[in-house]
Image (tube, rainbow, N blue to C red; front, side):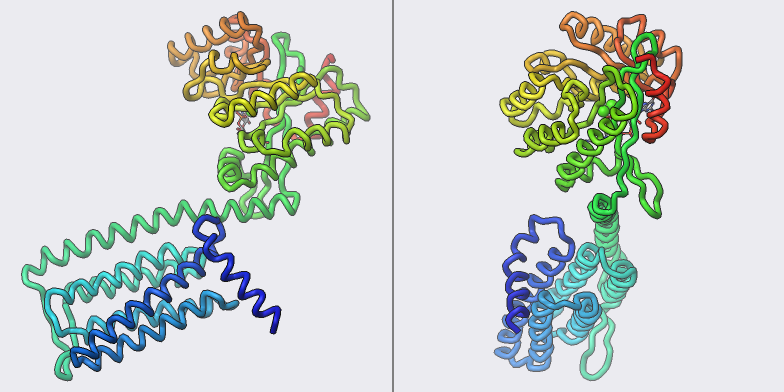
Amino acid sequence: MNSYFNSRYSMVKDLPFAMKGDNPEKKLRLTLLIAGFSSILAGLYMVIINVSSGRNGVAGLYCISLSLGFYIAAVAFSDKLSKHLYIIVHALLLIIILLFLLDNGHAIEKHSEYNYLVALTVGSVLVLRQQSPYLSKIFPIICLVVYLFFISTGLTWQLKHFQFNIPQESGFYIVNCAVPMIALLLTAFTLRGNYSETDLIKRELSQAIEKNALELYYQPQVDSDKNLMGFEALLRWKHPAKGYISPEVFIPVAEKSGLIIEIGKWVMERTLQQIAEWDRTQYLGDLVFSVNISPLQLMHRDFTQETLLTLSHYKIRPERLKFEITETTFIYDQKRIGEVINHFSQLGVKWAIDDFGVGYSSLKSISDFAIDDIKIDKSLTLQIFKNESSAIVVQKTIELSREMGITVLAEGIESEEYFTYLRDKGCHLFQGYHFARPLPAPDALVWIKKAKI
Ligand code: C2E
Ligand code: CA
Ligand code: CA
């Protein structure tokens, strides 16, 4: 009994935070609580008003909605949420229909009651998005049909028989009610599509970390003589049903949800573990391994200490590592970022600016930090033969970087033509499908074995 009350208490205590959090179940419970209390308050008010004006039948109806309010609020704390949801949504729909039919003492204002159905339709699309196809798709459509039926017929129950109240200028009236309602419903469905896709990725991604479904691939980076200089570690997520999911899809979700901290830690640990493994059996020379670091990860208070611990655990020289960050990192606390960069630089870790040429890249903004490399993004590289201004940007970037003592790596080298062009312009390092796609560890090892290190 005691544990029952404790679990209820912690549910109540947590609910206000559901506003901010990303837990859809908590959000649903909070919505139920709000809906329950609103029904209680609105029901109470309507009972008093109707009793005082002698409309006892309608007052009785509001008594039912009042009780339903208590029921909905109680369900917010129930363990078998989905079972109760079927009862709640249908009871709400039924009460609203009865309201349309019976609360017919006034003419023009009566139409305002149709708004309850708008709320129920759009609310159910959004709130029930995680529920069964019936609740999340069919029920809102039933609500829409009921709405369209009532606005076009104005059906009520009067003097023991049904009465139609077709609105004057019914064409205008129906179109003006139906079109916004359908637009609202479609918007809610579209929005929900994005939400639920993101929710789904988020949930599955956190399971993927636990179930070891993440993997690292390694893409070779070569110098102007095509000698192997290092690898970039790139994440792969092998989904049991959907196959490989691109990091372009799941990294942004991980960044938004904060999962990137855990993922980034895993990537660092796994890369260092892999280097240590290769190091035991293979001569690695001066190969450098690049790791992508998200801004949140870099800003995290434990980043420096945890990374240093992992480095010493696997006995890896810091010179073996290069951290790739994007320019957006610098919009965060510049002083702190500068300190982290300096700390690792002094130990021998290199820093590269990733995605150079995307957005507002400027060499000036990075000159304040101890940056060793810039990586010209593949989107810019792939434009050099198509777009003259891209070619000029690339050329000037290489010239300026060389003057500043910064190494330039061109990403997205897809053919020999790109390679020779960029090599002749002065680029130092190259990465792209022309040399190799990102490779699973055993294939990367083949490259290491072949390399003239
Ligand atoms: P990025 O850091 O710019 O990585 C380079 C991307 O370009 C990789 O895509 C790579 O497969 C692709 N690429 C390489 N050569 C070529 C080429 O010749 N042509 C074309 N069209 N593409 C090429 P990938 O592996 O899908 O990664 C996409 C992005 O996901 C990465 O872009 C990076 O921003 C992010 N990412 C991947 N792994 C990690 C990670 O461990 N941590 C973090 N924070 N982000 C990661
Ligand atoms: Ca990168
Ligand atoms: Ca890039």
